[in-house]
Image (cartoon, rainbow, N blue to C red; front, side):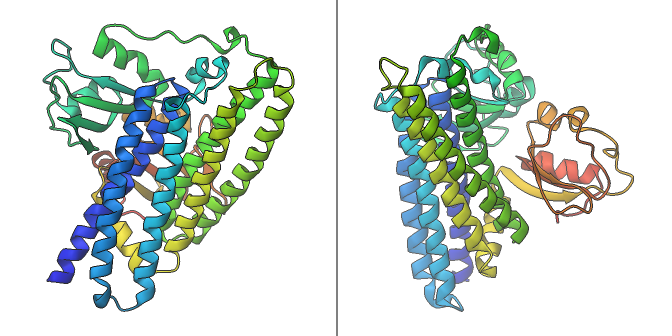
Length: 396
């Protein structure tokens, strides 16, 4: 009974640890992409919470060591905690760009409407339309997902749908960039106007730098998602994909260094370019940690089982399904499905029927066919409903 209690407690701690580190990365990237210094401060607050969770989990693991069949399992669990800590540190390093004034070129901060996803933070005030509404009502009205809620100084990660939003609460939301206008109009009665790419007037050389940095951000976040997928499904193929992403990020980091050195020669004050290098190095650190995470779970059944239980407790979950024959999705393109626009859930990757390689973040005219395997990330309730509709009794 005592062993079950410890296992339950460890599962809860690992669930919060996973959700908190993912939120830290979201906020850290957004602090620089959207010029939000406030996000950076929240990353530092959450890092303190991660430290507390790692210490708590470490204590549980060590106290339960006698009950484990092999000491290696304990060592691997402690190793996972160390890897997650690396991710949290990388997120903090990114956030420090805004907090310490390292700086970024002005062009960089005007182009974030070119991203597919966005994140926003709001402190709720008396008189706002959202005050007194539930989390579910806000999400249904705006198609944005509430990642976290801060009430009276304490963060709640992935708050329940029936949680009522009160004056003084701070919420962090994430969703398709196209939904940002509706969200801001719902909250403030107005929306932000972003200039189109052709009006940025940025030098051609810096456009390449910006696009490469955005690519590194996307790949590093994908590496984390795939690493958790690899752990959840004990899939060596997915783990290998994480390794390829890590190699790709290493190459992109070198490209960024070369481009920055060339561009710096043409600038009167190249100081803001230091922030670009800082981002590139941190993205690579995130991918390095993701690869370690993916590889560690393949070596321990206990670790994989425990982490699977923890992930299932999270409000935002990962699942892998195979499209059954006769599904209503057969023949539809990704654009026609528009899963993210309709629900906020995201197709992380697709492996075509009979294929071996994964296609990341599939979009546009990529068709869906029977036998295709999808990795989907989204709210637990939606994923369960989606599987039921497809007549899939359980994930692969």
